[in-house]
Length: 605
Image (cartoon, rainbow, N blue to C red):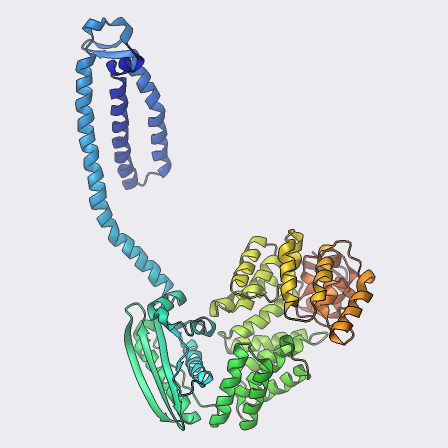
C-alpha cells in the first residue's frame, strides 16, 4: 500500500480537513467575542499561532493512534481486519459536512448583513471627515468675471471681489479662503463649484461678474452652497459708476452674505460697514490697477507708476499711499534700483499713517525700512511690525515680515509661529512656507525642512533657496545644486558665472584670491561695470569674500549651518556685532543657541 493510500486509510487527510475547518470556525467565533469584549488584537494573533502549531501534532496523532470502541490505541497494536477506521472516517465526513454548512452560512451572513450595516457607518464617517474639512461657516470669494465689451476691465472685477473678500475676513465666526488660494482658480470655472470648493475646503462660494459701460456699472453676485450646488442668494446691481456707488455695492453684498450665513456662524456677527476712502473714481481705478500688478508681482515699475498716479489724483487716499509705500519698499528686491526706494517708502508710509492711522500695511513698511538699515534699528522695526500685526491679525504679509526679521535675530521658535500663522491665513503664500522650512532647518529638523522645501518647489517657488543650496552640497546633491545655479543665471547675460559659482560652492579648498581678478574682469566685460562685492552680498558669500559683506543682507548668513569655513570665520561674529544683534540680545535676551561670554562677548552654536 502506498504512503498516500495509507494516509487515507488512517483518516489523516480527513482529520486535517476537519482540523482546518474547525479552526476557522473557532477563529471566527473568537474574533466576534474578542471584539465584543474589547480583548486586545494580540490575543487573536496568539490563538492563530497556537492553532497553526497544533496542526502537525494532530496529524502525527492521527497517524500513530486510532480511535476504537475500547478507546484510543496505537495503530500498530490493532489487527487490520478488526480496524474501525472506515466507520470513523464516515463519522469524520459527517462532522466535516456539518461544519462546512455552518462555515458557508457564516460567510453568507458576513457578506450580506455586516456589509449593508457598514455602509451607513462608512458614509457617516465620510460625512464627518467632509464636515471637518469644510465647516459650514466657510466661504471662498472667486474673482468676478469681466463682462465688459472690450474685456479690459479685469483689474476692476478682480478688485471688487478682493474688496469684498477683505471685508468678509474681518467678520467673527466666518472662515474665508485666502485671496491667493481662491484667485488661483481664475479661468478654471469649468471645473464646477463643488470641485473648486472641495479643493479649497469651503462650504460656500461667492461668484459674480462686473460689466462696465460708459458711466454705468452692473455687478452681479451669487452665493452658492457648494455641497448641494444650489444658489442661496443672488442680486444684480445696476448703478451710476461712482466711487461712492462701488463701495455701497460692496457693502450690500457683504451684508447679504452675513445675513445668509448668520445662522451657521451663530455668533451674532455683522459685516463691518464699508466706508468709501476716496470719492475720486479715477484714483480708485488707478489704485485697483496698481494693486493688481503689485499683488501678482508682475510689473514693479508699472505698479509704482500707477500708485503714484492714484495719490496724485487723490492726495487724501490713504490706502493708495500705503500701497505705494509697499511697492517702494519691495522695489529693490524686484531689481528696481533707479531711486532711493527706502527713503520714498518711509515718506509714503508716514503720509498714509497721517491720513489713516489704522492701516497696518504702512506700519509694516516702516518696519521693513528700519530693518533694512545698516545697522538695523531693531527695536523700532519690531515695534512697527508688532503694530501692523496688532491692527490686523489676518494680514499675512505683516506676519511674514516679522517672522523673517525674527529669523535674523535668532528667535526661530517665535519666527516659526508667525510664519505658520501666515500659512494658515494664506496656504498659497509660498514664501511663508519657505520661511517655516528655514526655521526647521536651522532648528535641526532636516526631514521637515526638506519636505517643506520640496512643497515650495512643486508650486514653482524658487526664492530664498540659498541656505538649502549649501545644505544640498553637504548632502552630496551636486546635480541639484548645479541645476539651481544654472537656472539662476539662465535669464541673464552672466552664464559665465555658472561654473565658477558651482566650483566655489563645491570645492572645500576654493581659493578666492586666486580667482578674484578673473571674476571681476569677466563681470566688467559682460556688464560694463566694475563688480561691487559689497552690493553683491550673495556673490561675496558664494565666493567666500566674507570681508565684503558689510551691508545688512536679505538673508541671515550668520545662521547658515554651511559652509563650515564661514561658521568658523571671524566675519560671522563680526556681522552679528555690526548689525546690532549682540547689543539687542544684551537687553532683550539671547536666543537659545547663543549665550554671553563675560561682559562683552558671546558664542553661538
